[in-house]
Image (cartoon, one colour):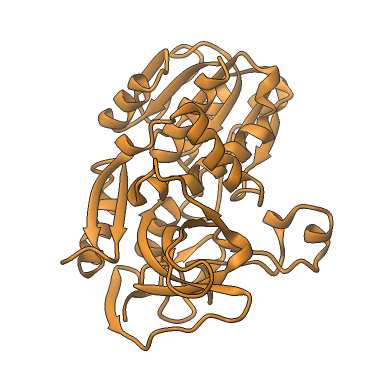
Length: 332
């Protein structure tokens, strides 16, 4: 079996490894497609994310779909929740499994992810895929789940306007979901092709800029910071109305954020931090995609076989497209 392991920052190596076996409560999956995201980019560029660093050569990849290889469900196509909550800590017992203090997460810490040909994963975390979604497109269901969690944090049912600051794949999914709710959306991104993609998906204003303020954009009820940098956070704080909400979705490179406290304090803003998704969000993402025919396929801009995995990460690092997908079953 071939696996792609990160040994250190910018050091990805292909390994030929023994095939894994599944425990009684697990499915053995033949991985079909893996989407790469901003957290994978952090691991690749820095060898760490937040306070967590490489402990050993790690298989990345947490946005994944696969085919069940054996057992009663053999042949089924499934999308997987990448978070294995412990079920015992206070967060889990309180219904907040996404905040589990002992969570094992695919492609993080000591838990290998999906950039390999075969992998076992708990059966309870598998959701059946509809035939209408191809494998590469279905990798975006996990980001849809994260976007749904961000919307829930913002309580968007009570809002009429929003800003999305950072228009990578997750930001573009937020634009689509906000427009489904009838909310007017303004968007910003320093990369022209991403700002234009936000406009194509319904943003009424899409600015090509790293930093905007209330002179550039109308005041909004809620802002989603999806870039993970201080310019984006400052834009979000400046463009939210007094009494509004800022939801931090992006992950800063140095594990630090800074913003003008006086502005946020005078406005009496609410800051909410979005971590991953709740367990119910993956099934919601599948149902919502089927019901509303979300445009996921057009977000997939580049596809690579596993043997060309290092090239996929260079494309991710350069941010030259939108969603990069690795397909372990594709020929090199």
